Image (cartoon, rainbow, N blue to C red):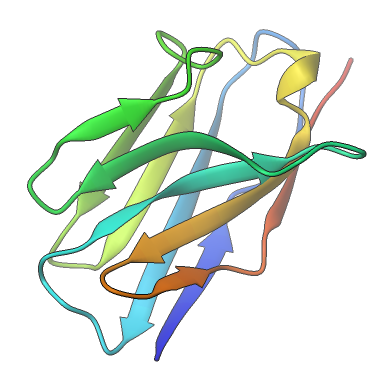
Length: 114
């Protein structure tokens, strides 16, 4: 089993920045992928960004150039630096971890509003 604990969500003004963190614990395998998905009210969960243990990244078009995903393999932690946020970035952000199985964090709320 793998446990994922997110932190860093909150209220931010449009144009501002926020950094999310997700720490993994439990049965961690070195060759894995981690990332972030989000779900806005009334919408389906969607990919935000993912990163492999080798550092290969993938971003949703809607966040390219504004969000940056990174990871610290020694700490089993993945980060999402969110810059120039927009009201449409408001959602619950979920940490994601995959080896052969997929695991999800409990989610952290991000609200972009003035």
